[in-house]
Image (cartoon, rainbow, N blue to C red):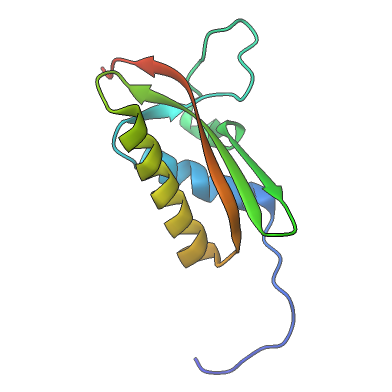
Length: 115
């Protein structure tokens, strides 16, 4: 299809958060997503239906800024998993959503043994 349609495309932050959450769970070493605030000091893994709560997407002048709150697998290299997450999220947002990216922050909320 080579027809160009004039206008603007707006993608909701919730849609971007769902895309980022699904991409994050596909990364090696990620056990699950966690809520950004751990009220009792213990990170709880969110169910798959609430992945959006572990992702904070904000729009800035430079583009989209993403914060991920994850629980990773015991024994994996935190730096390698974090870099893999950043690369995966950057790819998904650039390739599928085609939105400009301001940055990706990874917050490791906990470490868990995968069952």
